[in-house]
Picture 1 (cartoon, rainbow, N blue to C red):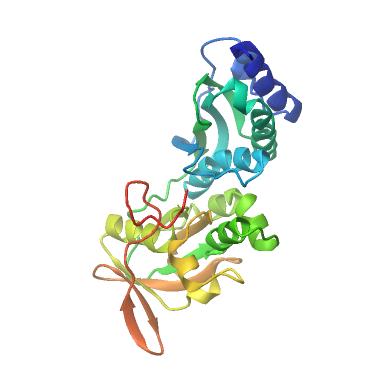
Picture 2 (cartoon, helix red, strand yellow; picture 1 turned 120 degrees about the horizontal axis):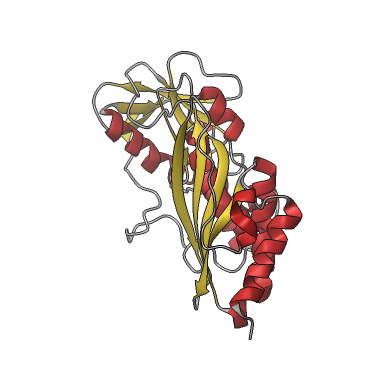
Length: 305
C-alpha cells in the first residue's frame, strides 16, 4: 500500500528534477501555494481542464504522453489568450495499488512540458480514485486577450498548425499504427509563441481542441457573424480526411480571425461574413457545416474517449 506522502514524493521528485517546481509551491509541503502578482501592463488569465481515464485516454497511450497532454490542454488555452504561462495547480485522483507506475510516467511527461514552457507547479491536491484523473488549473499573463467576440465581416479565418492530425493519429494508434500522425496525437505542442505574436491584432482567437467545425461555430456565435471555408486543405494535415479536419478534435491548433493577409506561418482557410452559420464553398457550390465535434454531453461526440 502506498500512502499519500509516497505519492506526493513521486510528484515532487518529477517536477523538481525537471526544474518545474515553483518556489511558490513551498516544496508541496503546505496547503497553499504562492502566486506572485501579474506583471505591469498585463492581465492574469486562468483556465482549467481535466483528463479522465476512459474518457480522454484509453490505455493505449504511454503515461508520459497522457501527462504531456493534461498540461498541453491548458497551455493551448493560454496560447489562445496570448498569455505567458506562469503557474498551475492540479488535483490528481489515483488508486495507489493500480496507478503507481503510471503516475511516475505521467508526472515525468507533465514536468517536461512544464519545464519547456515555464509553467511551474504551485501545488494542488491528491485523492483516491478508482480511475486515474487529473484536473489542471493554469495561470498566465496576457497583454491583450483577443477573446472570441471580435470577429468582423471581411476578416480572414486563419489557423496556426494543422487540423485533422489528432483524429487521424488517434485512429491509427487504435489500429496499432505508428508514424507522424500518431506522434502528433501523442505529443502535440502548445502554440504559445504564435499566440503571443497574434494577440495584439487578432480580432478573435481560440484553440481547436473539440474540432474545427464546432470551435468555429462557437467563435461565430460569440461574434454574431458567419464564416465561409474556402481552402480547408491549406490547413488539413497530410493523411487526414476532411471529416478528421472538420470534426475530429485534439489538434490544439490556433483558430483566429485576422484583418488582412495572414501572418507568416499561418494558413488562411476562409473568411468572415455577415449573417450566421459556417459553410464550405468550392467548385460544386456551398454547403452548411454542422456544429459537430467533441461535446462530452452529446451522444454524437466524435471522440471515442
